[in-house]
Length: 172
Image (cartoon, rainbow, N blue to C red; front, side, top):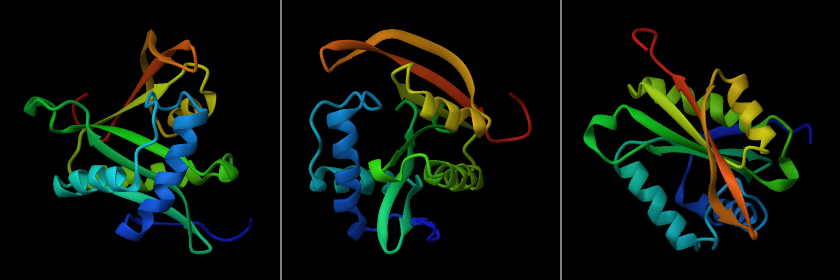
């Protein structure tokens, strides 16, 4: 447990571990509104698309094992949104509450700023997801809204919490 966590760019070899981490969250958590876990091939396709358009995709590694990942993608597809990104961060269930998400997000935000992005939006599944809400607040995200009952999973309705953080020092 005391081993150092390192953050690095995602590589093809990381995708089986990433798919396994995401599978757990798809099947057991409203953190994602996806209902069926995507295959390793689908996760690779998603990552390749994001890499291809210049978005950072990072993994957290400890003792040679991927224990979490974070990335950004387009907030919306229309060109006027090109400087705004939406973040995602997932941690292996046995590594939760160990600071892995914080390390990933700090590195991700730094890369986003370096690439010239201006705003980062967090769309958090479930307004009861205090771990994610607190993580984002600790990194300077502000609550900008709650969409009530917009996701249906596990036979119930869930909210989406919208949080936002600016990356540049000028303007809004």
